[in-house]
Amino acid sequence: MADTTNLTSAATRSAGTHTSGANASGTAGKTTIDDTVVSKVAGIAAREVNGVHSLGNGAARAIGALRDKIGQRDYGQGVKVEVGEKQVAADVVIVAEYPVSLQEVADGVRSSVARALQQIVGMEVAEVNVTVQDVFIPGDDDDNEDKKESRVE
Image (cartoon, rainbow, N blue to C red):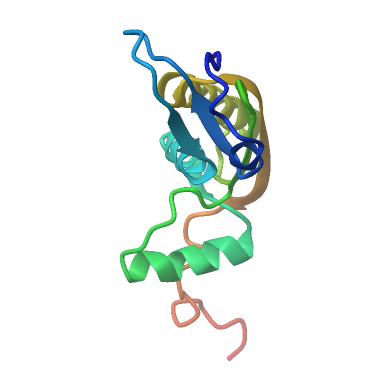
C-alpha cells in the first residue's frame, strides 16, 4: 500500500506498525495495524493447515497451555513478524503431526500465511520462513506407564 500522506512518523514505523494514507474512496485518514495483529493473523492461518499440531517452541507451548486453561489464548504464539512500510516478513515455528510430510506441511503453512497476510492485512509478503521445531506423535503425551506390561516377573 502506498502512503499517500506524510502522516507516518518515524516513531510509528519503529514501533512496528503498518500505516496507509487515503483509502479507495479517496477519503484521507490513517490506518495503523500493529505487529501483534499481524502476528495473530499469521498464527491463525498457520494453525488452519492440516498437519500442524501447534505453534512455538517448547517453552512457548508450555506457557500457551497455561494461557489456554485460563481462557487467554495467544494466537500469535510461535510467530514473529517484521512489518515495513509496504511489506511484511514472518517467521513461524511449528510442531507437525506424525506421519505427515514435513515439507508439504511447511509449504502449506507458507502459502496459508502469505495468503492471509495479503488478503487480511493488505500488505505484500516478502517472505515466510517456517521452522519445524518438533513432531507430535499421538500417544506420547498419554500416561500409559500403568498399562505397559512388565518385562520381568
